[in-house]
Length: 240
Image 1 (spheres, helix red, strand yellow):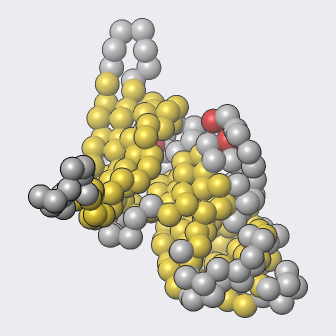
Image 2 (cartoon, helix red, strand yellow):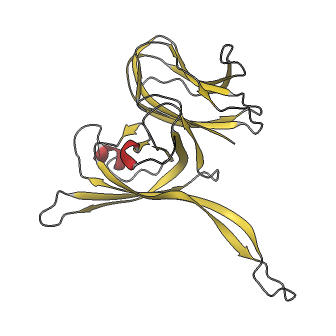
Image 3 (cartoon, helix red, strand yellow):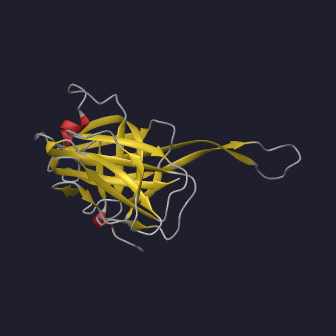
């Protein structure tokens, strides 16, 4: 994927598909402290790296329908969630497109009503788990994919292996019946695959971040297994 418009940008948080209620994403990205260590002997600044951070602001519309944005943003007994929120933002809608993900806390939920406009909302998410924002790829197609039963999805070709492990986030919107197990698998030849990351078994709306491994082979895919019907989910994976 080369230069692109914003037409393929999609947002998924904690098992919620927010794309019908969000109209703008502001400034998702990473930052890091630059610590001044300039000595007397220098005539220009010296800096070293401090701690990192990540955040995103989301603008949208108030939607009180079941399972929509108001439910997501007040999912803590009708208050702002205090638990970690797994955030996935995709730059396209096809498997292999660039995507980023991080574990965040929801900091705000503001509602604004002005004349001549629909009721608007603004929500902010800030890094929560100390692991930063990771850029990688979408492993599902759509990117919201429906597996009617156990499925080995098409692999994404990285062109080469990597040696620092990987991290993955899933956002499961729904499961019609049964129990599904979701795994990230990898392969050196796109024929024989081994498990790399395994998520907690899914029975309903869910979201999780899992990291691990050392060598990650050239090809990576998402696999769903178990006895279930109509698993609707998004998966993002990043090499570390």
